[in-house]
Amino acid sequence: MLVALLAATPAAAHDAEHTQVSLTFTRDGSFVLDVSNDPNWLKLRMEPFHGNFVDRVVLWVDGKEVRPESAELIPGDTLATYRLRGRMPLDAKSLRWYYGLVVDPYPITIRRADGRVAVDEVQGDAWSGSIDLSGQFTAPLLSERAVMALLVSLLIVPIAIRTISGRRST
Image (tube, rainbow, N blue to C red; front, top):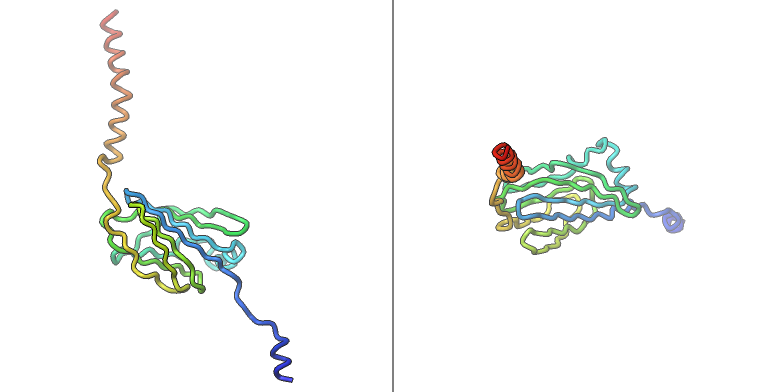
């Protein structure tokens, strides 16, 4: 009788997370981090946190936390994706990653700025192994301010020349 009762009891299983993580870097140190999950699962898991997804993710770089500068939710029927953007220090050497919503193992794909791709598996509610960041970031030749000054001067110089030459001819 006990065996029949146990066999008739439905097995309790948690819902599928379908977690996928992709971290893509560019030469200037900026990154795009896509964290995708089943949309219904994600909605239920995020309720206690009032939609504050950034606090569920930790990027630990050379002993310091690097926080994303922006986050956006990209809804989908099969997967919903939080897209986080930010910038790594140019001299960054290693990264450890933690995602505090999941319990099942999931893949993380790292696309380095130098073209190398690495795929690792994170054991659910655990830190990733050390991810090598060294040698892929470089400082730009000109700062953003220098580029803006150059563009403004390229626009102003022809106007100034035309104005000066117009005054001389009259």
